[in-house]
Image 1 (cartoon, rainbow, N blue to C red):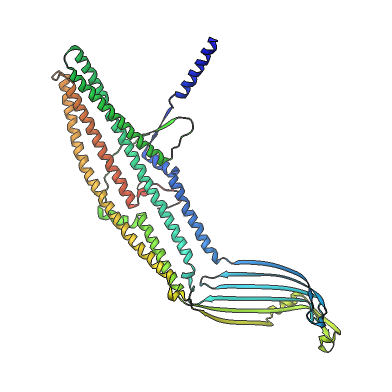
Image 2 (image 1 turned 120 degrees about the horizontal axis):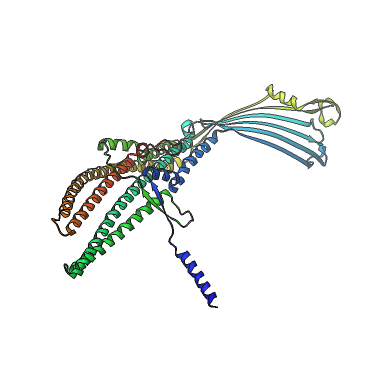
Length: 519
């Protein structure tokens, strides 16, 4: 019994250890370019937006379909037993009718509709006194309807196509914009992660040094060279630096999670934790462009500004279209048809069908009926002008008013976007200028602290200074100076990346492309 209890206890212990085992940490070393490429490849926001240009391209094809000819084929057959309506034709008679026809329709760019019809009808009837039975009737009909005022002209009839093409450009600009945004976000998250790593190193170094100092103080208290107050002070420093290390580690994890989200790094199901180790360190690369040049490039290439210009083009198209829709509807209708007839023609005595005496018959085929059409034997021509005055174009004009309001809104939006870019660039150049000054100051401070630490270390080695506390303080100040210098450099790098984003040249500067798109 005891043996069973022991085995069960050991099994539970092993299971407990298996579940409480810490997950394996997998380190992924990535450069900044690796992160940007991975974001372009796997970021879900970019993937979703990348569908829109393709959808817009299909919309262009769909808008063009209106000018593709349409062919319609039709077959009809009817067998009827018809009640006679007058005594000479009998009380009832049978009639078989079959018809096959086709017609071709096509919209042309001027707004006209062209129709070509061909009808072929065969009628066989037992009705008395028919002159021709069976009868083959053929007809070719050409109709053309052309608006002369409203809906006239290539510009009006290609309105939907032009808007669809502009929408393709707009969706590509939206894709460009989100890629620029994501590239900037990746850069910012990457450099913030680098900064967090450096900050954690500095705080960990301070904690290690304060821990060593605490041990020295504890030994000094034990031998009586220092008091309990000195020990409390040393312990307080250790606790303070432990809090700074914890805060720095939390900040590092926050920046790392932001970068993981941008790269779409999802768990692989193995229970391991991926941690990103940045390979690149920031280097100072000063942009040579002046504010005026940056503003000029931004007004030409910033995706938001170029997008609103495309929206303005659509507004102008809508105004011209709606202005045309206010015109009266004046349509020219042209109709031309040719008939042909064949079958079995009965010859009655004295050419009087009422006699009921058939003295002969003449037979002709369907082909004979079609030849009559080709000879133009039975033409039918009609030309008509029809004028319609829509009252809504006089009293309402809502469509035109809406298009004008859309244009005014887009003009204001363009002005807003241009001012937003101006002030954004102004802020970026101020940040660059201030960061340069801060970096120069922090670099001088770091160089001075390096010299101080070097002097103090020499004095300590020579025995001129008995306590290492003063040296520790100088070393801590040097570490803070290095951290401050790196933070200033990273702030400068992020400002440069924001400048490239605002100017719309992020991909060009980094020699990056996305699919077949040229931004």
